[in-house]
Amino acid sequence: GSFPLPGGSTEARTDAATRYARGTEELRLSPELAENWREIITDCLAPTHTERVARVPDTGALLRRVEEAAGTSPSARLPRLRPRRWRRPVLVAALVATAMLGATAVPYALRDESPVVAAAPASCEKPAVYEDQKHGRGYTANWNSTWDFTIKQGDGGNQVREVQCLLRYLHGITEVGEVDGSFGPLTHAAVVTFQKRAGLDADGVVGAGTWRALRKADEV
Image (cartoon, rainbow, N blue to C red):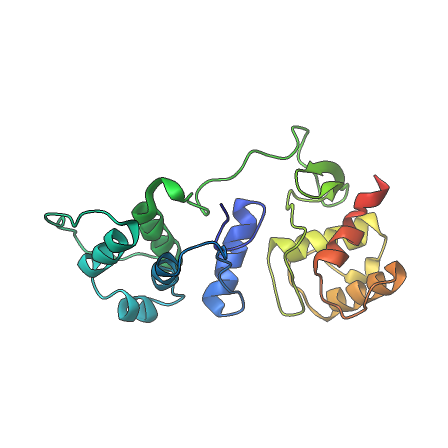
């Protein structure tokens, strides 16, 4: 019932996958997930090719683990697979795990949910009001509906771009600099300025509380 990498959109989850591959993001598996499934998914989604080969040396062994976890009868024979060179190992590993899990999982990086609003796409310069099923109403820019995903200095991607747009064009903190998706010193300083203004802990880290204040959810 949840994605192994966070984000309210395909772009957000792709950014999270990039950070995961760099070692700055962790998998977020449901606590209700059985331990044997947790180990299988973690092994299939190991960040590097070397780690995946070490944890999942061959498809036959992986299939047996999946059959044991699912409580199904062993397959009589395995299909012959032609080896291929993949350019996106993290995504491919996710697809392998998804295929093994069948109907219990959704390909998080290939498919997006329905848009939260049917209006014209929001722009960075003109943040738009939208409805979030979990958090209610709030402002968005560039269609990134992040609320409880934490970002900090050194990060990059659509979540950072969203923060920069909201700081600059919704809250008038132009000191954030260019909207470039890079959480550098200027963005950090602008976040601290905003947090002080909002009466939050001014640590420069954008967590759930800062997201709510940035989106002004209680004021729309």
